Length: 435
Image (cartoon, rainbow, N blue to C red; front, top):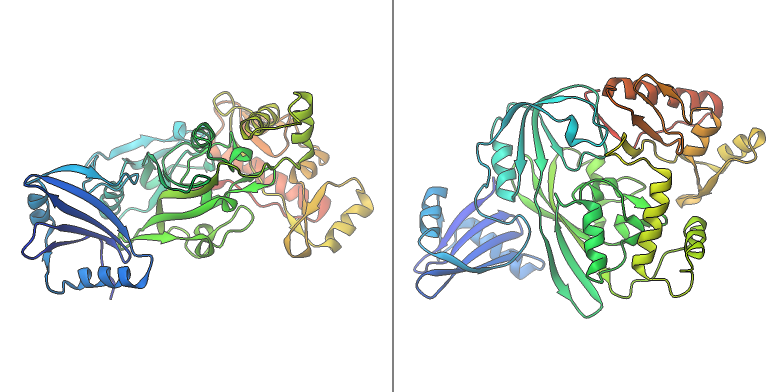
């Protein structure tokens, strides 16, 4: 039998209050003195704790069921003295009722293609997410983070949740390794730079990637030999149908190349609300890419390199190749690097011995999509208000005023041409809304 969350409980004969947020998640309000609450957030990581959550759910003595109005009345009899600082874990919606109808959303995406949503709601907490999931539920739902991986090909005839759960909280620290929880609405680049400032290292190769923290595990973003999965601890997400909060650890996420379970079997079933990372003060540097080594040498940083210096080099490389979305609309790399068999590579090499490729898992090879597009003659191509960037053939750009449909038509023509010339099918990284 499906259970809708959250569920509200009280301890009989004592003031203790509980919100059961999912099959393994409970927030507890414990009395302190006559007028205060101490708030604890529990995750059932072992069987005894899981059994405790199950007993709360069942309402076994001495636990009593409460409706939400009674629970709120009892909660408001005291004020909070202290609470665990997990981003977004608050009991009340913060923006309840603040839908904006027929809202322009183009400016919320890095492509900047004009489009509208039937209604949009900015979520700042788990409670906001649950409220929005239940409201206007006759309309389809879309979750928008930083908008860096979205092409609005037409208006969105449904609800749009703009993710803005903020906050960064260190939850464990053994002197070297740290585990840090980050709200899904935080800027990815801002989080990377904050981590470096705190001496929490391991994400420096992913500096200056646009987008939000919540989107990073969905796409398993990566650059210069590092992927999110390498420093991922877990994430928490709310089920769209039941409101249950659940934790996804690495195996359950099924990470792949620019891929995860959230783009496959669990697509459009969850709203990611926070992500936890495992970082280290003494994390090994990852500088094996030649372009990073060359830039370090040119700056005289090739000896005694710091994590911050690697981040600065990565930012310089990205800025030299990729246009700033604030100046030219784009979503970074539009296509994935295709993974092909060695037989396909050998066929291409017969006519193009200079083709650029890299080793891939399972004995395959990864072709450089940018090289294929460049050699096919598309680099710098402009069609009306959109085109292919003149410094990086992987990047499609909106020079101003292009529609999402026009950008997608260009992308589709490029994909067809690459099939004709090389027999290789390119796959977009960017999600197209409206197709």
